[in-house]
Every structure is written in structure tokens, then in C-alpha cells.
Image 1 (cartoon, helix red, strand yellow):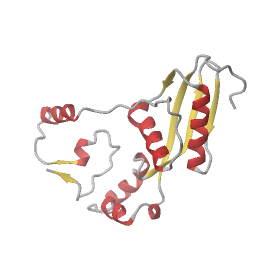
Image 2 (tube, rainbow, N blue to C red):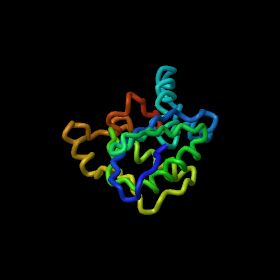
Image 3 (cartoon, rainbow, N blue to C red):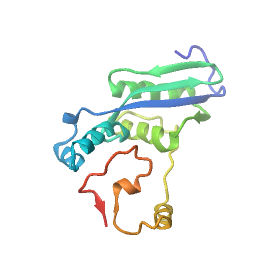
Length: 174
């Protein structure tokens, strides 16, 4: 897909992933019970619709990559997620990109790729790091205090931008 390229040539890769929720039967029964412990059918449907947003309940169905300097792209869309990730990492290991361009890559795409690779035991080149953003819990606490929400917090409150996914009733933090 990439044709001929010389090792060490500049490589800026645009990366985007597409995810879907796992088949509900593949989620362990106790986890399924916790996830679906919601108030009503509407909330149940929202939970099901959001399974693909979490790498523990979702899976990657496609990784799109565009190499800016070569103006070439590739879509990794194998039906077998393990094979898809293995092919992606194999190419990344050969290309050795200096930069990645993403939308929300540090907070979503890269953590998702890293976690799914670990879950599926897909080898990752040791010296290639898909950088991820982690938030200092003290910053989150300050932000919540600033909003005046010092009372018991549900996961729904602490996961900003959760796409409208309801928190399970049993997942209240005190």
C-alpha cells in the first residue's frame, strides 16, 4: 500500500479509528449486569449505543492512515481485529513516523489502540509510542469544585463529553 520508501524519510501520519461495541454476549456476565443496571429502556439503549466508546466493551473495525509526505493512504479494515492491529503496528514499525496528526488522538484514538492491542496481545514495536493524554486527578477535582459539585459524584459527571452515555446506577462515587 505504501509503495517504496526509504527508511528515515520524513513521515507525518494522519490517523483516525472507527470503533463499534462488542457483541453483548462477548462481555462477561457480571460486567454486562453492571453496565445494564440502568433506570429504563431508553438508558439501556444509550448504554448499548456507547459500548464502542470504551476499549473494554468495544473493538476497532478500521484504522485510517494517510502519509502526508507521500500523499498516500491506507485503511486497515480486516474483519479480524487482531490481524488489523498487527498489520497497523507492522507498518508503523517500518515507517517510524516523526509526527501524528489526529482529532482527539491523545485522548481517544491512541489509548484505544494501545488498550485493544494489549487485550488482544498484539506485539507493539518497543520504540514506537502513541502518546496519550492523562489528566491529573487534582485538576479534575478543582474543575468539579469550581462547578460547585462537591456532593457525591456519579461517573456520568466525572466523564465529561461522554456522548450522553448514562452512568450505571451502581457506579456512584462517594
